[in-house]
Image 1 (tube, rainbow, N blue to C red):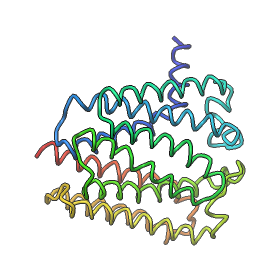
Image 2: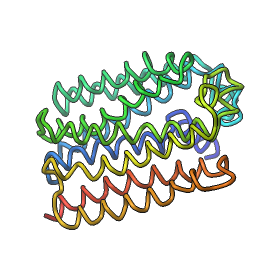
Image 3: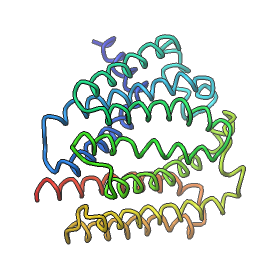
Length: 289
């Protein structure tokens, strides 16, 4: 039993299950917005996306095993901690990716499969090596976050239109403060591992102000979605306004707080809670109307 528990913990850590589930939930939201109801087609979509996100996470840890070993935040992961050999991690990650691709191919459509392949290639082939060279890797990295809801959108019968563009733009903008605040919170860790950080390019105060601008832009981009005919009910509009005010109010501490370094992690959590709340808001509105 203990051995089984250890293996489960190992798999959870390698796949970063919490992050992979978030990615899967964003694909679910994209499906609901396009299809407007539950469907059996959701099952292969969600399973395929979960496996792709899990496999890409494991492959990322294999690629960055040297850097992870030098970071306090990541040195407990399966490979640097010695709980899993690099070759075993690579084989398991590739198996998860292959299984995920197979499920999307069999259970969704060619567009969803193509987007899944693009996301993995972009994340592991472009973003992962690029972030070792420049802080601007955040820009192509943010593009990855737009693909799961797009996969869900096309799986749910959606078409490439302005509505999809609005959803993708929202997720792209959210990725910016998400990445920046994480880098700010663990900036010394990233520096020790040899990653370029935003505070090396700009001062801490300036980076804090830029982060607030991105957070503000995230709230505004959420308010723009109903203009494209998605969730333009009074409940959605009211919910978006309240969530936007809550987000901006909490993020304003980055500008006004004296000890800004202690505020990056709470701001990071707030940004993530915000986008989860927005996805739930839109999904429930569509399901009950």
